[in-house]
Amino acid sequence: MTLTLYVDGPRWRSHLTRTAAETPGLVPVAKGNGYGFGVPRLARRAEWLGADTVAVGTYDEVADVDRRFSGTVLVMQPWRPFGHDDASTDPRLIHTVGRLEDLAALGRRADRPRVVLEALTSMRRHGLVAADLATARISARGVRVEGHALHLPIGGSGHLAEVERWLAAAPADRWYVSHLAPGELTELRRRHPEVEVRPRVGTALWLGERAALAPKATVLDVHPVRRGDRVGYRQRRILRAGWLLVVSGGTSHGIGLEAPTAATSARQRAVSIARGGLDAAGRALSPFVVGGRQRWFVEPPHMQVSMVFLPADATPPSLGDEVDVRVRHTITTFDRVVTS
Image (cartoon, rainbow, N blue to C red):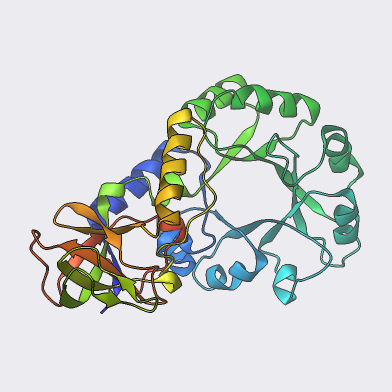
């Protein structure tokens, strides 16, 4: 009895092939929890798409890709002179370099590693400043420079202006880019036909057809409860009569886990404040949907199951039924992925 991701295979595969056809130079990204599918499954799917390169987040993810993908593996985590095993010497790897001292250290290796030089964009996360990026390619010794990389902010506009500044400051024949919109990619290629643009795409590729993805949880128990009953680990009091549902999916799956709010508008901030007030009062809306509505947690989710409340005027599901779950795929680990 599991937390399951059901995938409408024909619809999902159609989206993947359409996205690949519309995105010349596509580099599929397979990292973290594999966007809910798992990195190994995405590696196989990238091979199926005919991609020549796949991008992973860290060196620890290389093994999940290595046996399932025959092409080049780009590691987006910047290389450092510590924390690597023998996988970092694989000739299929392209290392991301964001410091001059790391470039020099790689250049002292005997295997002449392949590298991408990353620019320190407005993200301000990793990378070389413009002056260092401009000189690094010329001064690089003992490595094979495969191109430059730009990791840009998500959403918004004005990315092209930043890209143009980098292309002018540090010319290169090939640029790996993240988070450029399709229209921006088209315009960039129109302006610079001499530059090979390699878009690294994760969310828009794997999760771009949300209607093909149906996360569901299994109902494991249904208990009638009365006002005043105490339930759960924390023995919280039930405020009105209804039903206590025990459903699959807990903290080990990512249920109930949230990143800091990304609220940028006044309305989003107001919603976050209101939600915080409910949390402080011991009330939190669960991601489980029963009878067309998200239902309240009775208490914080357990490791593998959650307890949610259903009011008495609603018809409870039966044991073994599955209910919809509204989750962020990038933080959810499913027990099963079932593709039609």
